[in-house]
Every structure is written in structure tokens, then in C-alpha cells.
Amino acid sequence: MIRYMLALLPSKKCALPFIQVAQSIFAPLNDGYLLNEDNSLPHITVCAFECDDSKKIEKLCEDLRDCKVDPCSIRILGLMLKKGKNPPYHYSINLSIAREEPILQLHYKIRSLLIENQIMPINPSMELYQPHITLAGIAWKPSTSVILDSRIDDLISMPIEEFHLTLGKSDAIGQCLEILYEF
Image (tube, rainbow, N blue to C red):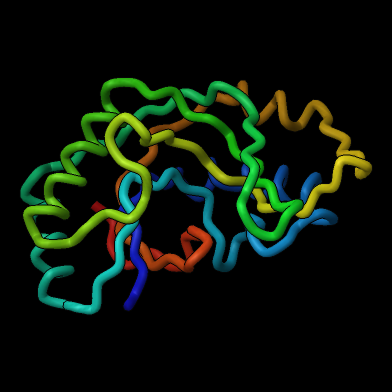
């Protein structure tokens, strides 16, 4: 099965600070997920799914074009450390995004469109949906120190342009590898 995601992406200009912070602070601890300019793009997953039926993908894109999805403003709340299941010392470093009405409405609308097209979302949905931007996946043992500097504060407080909806290819760990279509 091919893994896809409908995700909100920033402009290239706005994406660069996310990439720079991820690379400069978390590269030494990286264990597979690290934002870069080539194949791991900063994004907010709205819905992830798997599908091998190109007709279903075409129909979904047609439905999304008909919906007239507007760009979405976001608000970064802060840095979030999320414990992974495997390996034992894996954590995700995320920027938590406010669960405000525009992004939640988009999530509900896209989730409904996927289900109407007989495609099941695979990421947490509805009340469990927590929008975020993953900066890195790290291997971090309690004895390892990580120095967070002012670049994190600058990233959290920087003015954010609107994010726009895209369909992209993903991998098993949720990286946005390639943009297939922009709405």
C-alpha cells in the first residue's frame, strides 16, 4: 500500500526556519526523522491514509477541489516532547499547534471525504487529533543533555503565513516526502 497524507504546508520561505532549527539543534540526536529541504518537509498532518487505488485518489482530489479549501492560519503554542513506543529511547520533538476551529473543521471535513471515498484515515482523529509540526525524531536517554536555545523561542513566536492544503506521499514514520498536489 502507498501511504499518503493530506497536510497543511507553509510556503518555502516560511518552511526554512523550521528546517534550520531542526537541523541545527536536533541533528546530533536524530534517529530517522529530521526536517530537511529534500524529502522531509515541515507540515501539519490533517489526515494520513493508505491507498493503492489511483481512481480513489483522483476522486478524492476532485472532491477537495470542489470543496474550495481555503489556506489555514495556525498558531504555535510551544514545544512538545512525545514519547515513542520503539525503540525504548525514541521521542518526537514537535511544535504543538492550537486546536482552533478552522483547523479542526478542515480535519473533520477531510476525514469525512476520505470515509465517503472508502478510505480509512490512519492518524488519530476527532477528539484525539492533535495538530503539530514534527521537527525531529530523536534517540534521547535521560543522561543525555539537549541544549535548547533562543532559536526555539524565535520559531514559536515568528509570524506565520497561512498554510495551504496538499496531498503528499508519506513514509511509515509520517514524513512528508513528496508533494503530489496542492489545493
